[in-house]
Length: 428
Image: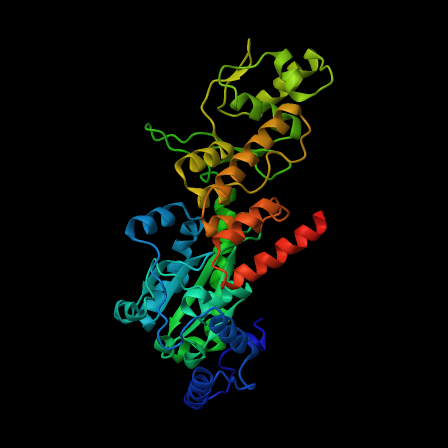
């Protein structure tokens, strides 16, 4: 259910009358700085943030920050790419028929996809509403994608409620998309067009599509094909997911098995040791106390029964098959500089309830690798997405770096600064 302040055009409102009033209020604000108190508070606040940040309502143009190569790379690695088929099926196809545009941004406000009516896309180019453009408030002023991102809530903007003069003929409805595992903002889904986009029904449609995308992302992560890597023969590798869960999930073919914590530890250690481990080595890896070798052999015997096509050999113990792990995907993406995809895959620490010394070492090593790559980057989207998670929320250095890469006039900058101040007080 949308809040009344989310709606730009309440039921029964006359679009023509509302547009005349808003044009007069817009002209007065731009010329005198005086804002009619009858305007929606959401709009008043956004206008003020925009002008405080130095935006010129008469001249502002959204900055185009991504060239074709950078845009292609971000699209390829961004977690919302998995949701685009749902967006196209539920929203883009009908939007194109209705002469509307559908846009998807990242968490920093950069438009990654703009699809829909071809004629409207051509018109929208004049105001830089194109893939690669920055439609955060600091770059484009008051607009549904940027303001939804600033407030982390659904937003509608009707015509002259836009602050930048060239955008006032347009209306838009937008809602943030959140990571289903971490709750972090992944980006924003936006519907843009004429006055019809500012109706309650349009916002409901956008919100419903966002819910479907978040559900699809969750299903995609639970799917047996999610972590499968296809080899040249056409077979897919078994997958092992150990990030953020109390026990590992093993996938092979259409079979999904959730392992006990001990079996999770054993299989992970073996997958990380291609040369194999002896019973004694496994004992040391699993506990600081002396582990009876007969107990470890018994656990390995029980593990065999749930491994499916994976072959566990002994002397030393090793898995003969290749396994695709979420740990390996995070490492590979970090090595390749695909920080946004690495952050999306890094849903949490390795087997967080495990106290096995070797698991704790792997957990710390991977976490520090993710952090070090982020701290050395200026990727605001990746930093914000990590900082918004449970494993990043109390990380003072990550928030410091996030603050450093965000423009000082960005609404997110103020939010990050406030959180950083709170962390400083807590550390105090």
